[in-house]
Length: 234
Ligand SMILES: NC(=O)c1ccc[n+]([C@@H]2O[C@H](COP(=O)([O-])OP(=O)(O)OC[C@H]3O[C@@H](n4cnc5c(N)ncnc54)[C@H](OP(=O)(O)O)[C@@H]3O)[C@@H](O)[C@H]2O)c1
Image (cartoon, rainbow, N blue to C red):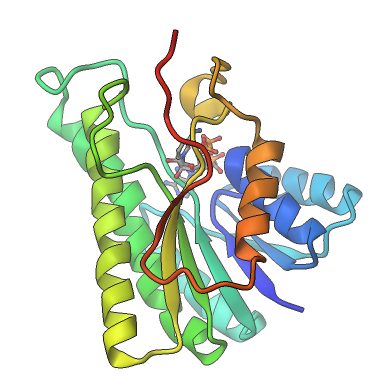
């Protein structure tokens, strides 16, 4: 039986991923930053028959919190085999590049890249002992003509670069670690005000497709995998 930690698993895509990995036999650890939200998600997952081991407090803007989380995981869940870096924020998606405030770029980078990098770095030794995987939930680095909020796209490009560099190093050094990135495609969640346009999917559909990918028995080192592409909104 394999064990996964999903960050930002209390709602949205992270919840869908936790649920469908759980339904396919994974033991699930919820990464969340509020006890009440974590417990609500755990109750819903348990009702769906998922084997939830517990929750870990993961606030990506706090280095101290991430260090504590990594220590807790090393002690309580040394069998961890998969880290899903899902937690993320949108930044201000309503402004163009010229209007974007530096504060917004810094805040978005802090969560989507710096916090995600720090947690990944801290969990690498536990994961490596278990031939583990690190999977990032992201968007393509290529600029879409249809949708390109600067703070968000910049932070995800940094996260994608992290994946590419780590995958290269794991391969070159023959380490027992794998990393790849997954673009879920437009998904109806709080992140986009629960938008539901043509081309959008719900968290159940995305979670199920994500679990299918994770369980496909193949190696995906360094890959960028699109579950659903971004399409032009009519
Ligand atoms: N929705 C889409 O169309 C779409 C498309 C491509 C990629 N993605 C990516 O998918 C991932 C999940 O997004 P979503 O759409 O499911 O968004 P969501 O419903 O807003 O969920 C975001 C999750 O991240 C957590 N989070 C936010 N800031 C955090 C922080 N500082 N520290 C720790 N956790 C934090 C949230 O926790 P709280 O509940 O406590 O705020 C929540 O659990 C993100 O990385 C996003 O970029 C989304």
